[in-house]
Image (cartoon, rainbow, N blue to C red; front, side, top):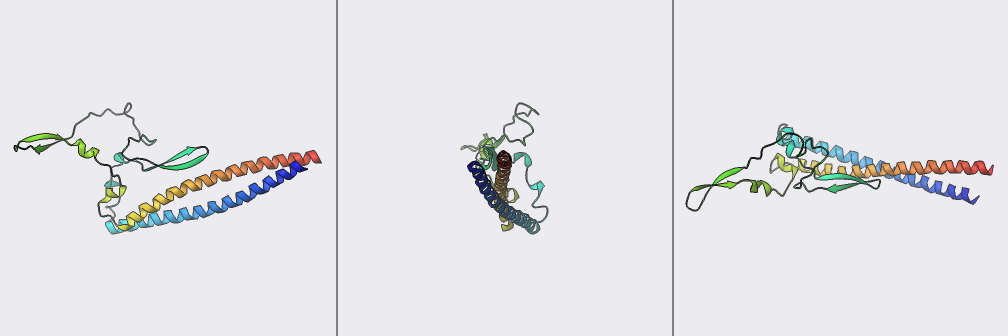
Length: 195
């Protein structure tokens, strides 16, 4: 009788935790919906203020895009990690690696500068490109972007964190459901044995 009582108590605690996780999941999903709605609304306001052609796909080069965040899955849990955009990130979205794909010739970017005597000499332009350490996607649309675009970026960043929380809560619900079903099977076996 004590084993059946133990199983019943564990079932009750799992059921209580299931309802708590479900309530927090619904709360997080509501917050995620609100943030996404705000993000898209602010983006549409920015497009209206700047003009429809000022905020769009033609203002950035998608080949130069680098992720700022990545989602890692380890130990049955999702974690959000920041990525250094200046590093050589080889994400799953890249189509070609350096060994495969199209061969590209290496062309040096050179420019002209005056030396002390007034003569003209060549200088390497790659140094300016390498010095780009600040990577902010808002700068693709100009230096003075509207506040609505900044608010949109902030809302989407927060929604990414909430999406990871929602995914973790859903995984927790699945684990609780599996353990509840296992304990119910064990309870049915114990009830049959006692009968």
